Image 1 (spheres, rainbow, N blue to C red):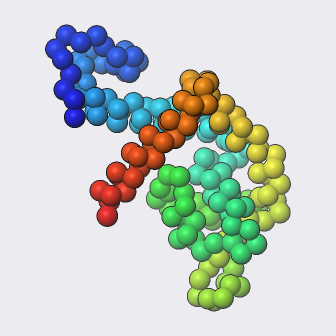
Image 2: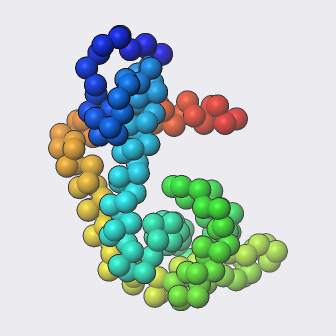
Length: 169
């Protein structure tokens, strides 16, 4: 933890948040900067998927199930793969099932386990909005056009996640 020096010039994050006092430490500023960037990215992605009748979490579920293939996944496995925690995975999948994008059944090896699978309608919807993957990547490139900087960001975020995973265990 690096302490801030008194009278240091405000950072762009301080200015953006209209915060009068400097962050007490660089690590605190980094945490807030990461949360702020994630929130801005989340809003931009939501603006792209919501016109298609999906929330970002529903979009994430459909992408997970498409990646799972014909086998599908148990509900809790879907929950564990979500980018962000969803408080009601069952409710989330209920909505996708009601819309015809997902189906659930007990046809796997363990008939006690409900498996979720993407339907043809869900796959077609994803095909319509797959351009979002490119647009989402482009959102990062607007601030970091250099691929080496993008890779550095990926590497640094991996270190942050690894440290947080260690704390959680």
